Image 1 (tube, protein in one colour):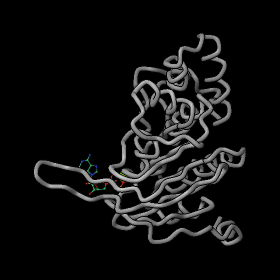
Image 2: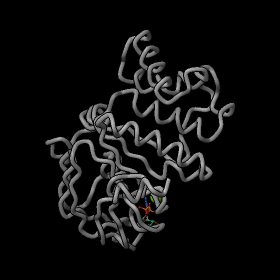
Image 3: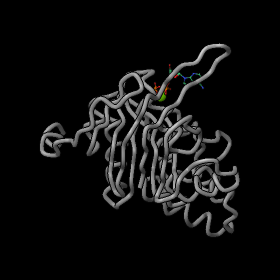
Length: 233
Ligand code: ADP
Ligand code: MG
């Protein structure tokens, strides 16, 4: 599903250049649930943004479901983002004046789906995340965990092949974090490929594979011992 080879990325600020990704190689197969772990500043978000086509690498190659992602014009890039990628962020990024249903339906509006289909799909995914009864609530009437569930429903609404989550539990308490990760595990079990960026080892343990990033390089890439992971619950 995802193939990256020798990826490099630097940020230039004025005369200075900060080399953030220093030759990243990794592949993710369809249906995997992978965490990208590392301390703050190690380049996790930079890597995820490149995978999400929100940013481009300086060097190296990125192939998404067989398509090389390079120098695409914005229209084609947007089409790929819609078709392939769903995003979940630490801060939820919901629109404050739209209710849960309309937040979930919004990407479908941009994809020009008819209203009826938008509403049906939005309701379907709200049900999936356990929030059918909260469809007409505004974000500020929802708890943090509920907001993240709405954001997950929104990410799923366009039925993307890959979900990319940047610190999805970063703003949640421990119990709610585990609930959100349970939901993410369930979505993965249906076959969807999911990448979760986190700096929390306990959250990473709830995925199936942990890729450890340090100072812009992968220092470790291991499968989670599922028996051991279960025994922590
Ligand atoms: P992480 O998500 O692991 O905390 P990031 O990928 O956000 O790390 O950042 C890696 C490094 O790149 C940090 O030192 C950060 O300050 C720097 N950085 C991130 N984004 C930018 C940017 N847009 N411009 C300049 N520097 C940036
Ligand atoms: Mg980050």
